Length: 207
Ligand code: ATP
Image (cartoon, rainbow, N blue to C red):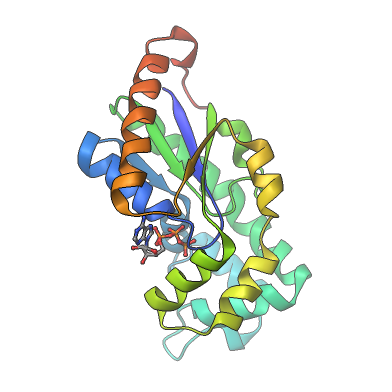
């Protein structure tokens, strides 16, 4: 199975890309964020480990993990961030492999904002970066999430440098224009990926 890793900075357009590839070409999308959210649901073993290792302030009144409080904590405390990563990263990897082995899609896309930072590169056959300028990303996220510029700037500052991300890329789509300009690039990429799936080297099982 050819697995394309999809990443990019906040607001670059990862969801736009994966939604299009799924709706237009029925490509299976594996979303690392959705997986980690599910893994941390109350009652799971990852939840129990989080409860043991994190302060009460990151849980709401019902005992669920308050994602906003958790995000605030890990952005300001690197040790807490590493602790959370140790709990969820191995489990996320296991779930990704499970979904891959069950999929009959022509190829799969693994969408993960922190794909490179989390060291998931080794799972993917190619890395696709969706890139757009910092100013456009800030404006899009402010409009989408009704948040302040400062908030988005802080998240950008905590993420990998754009140049480092681009250096790691096998494929790049530039998303500074309208939808049509994005989908034109994606149509071309889809053809390229179909050609690559014909190569036997990608028929691997994930263990
Ligand atoms: P995050 O890192 O926060 O998950 P993301 O990389 O998934 O963000 P999207 O949610 O796809 O980014 O895009 C950010 C916002 O910009 C969304 O509201 C989306 O609809 C809008 N957007 C993305 N690309 C375009 C485009 N080419 N034209 C118009 N709007 C766009």
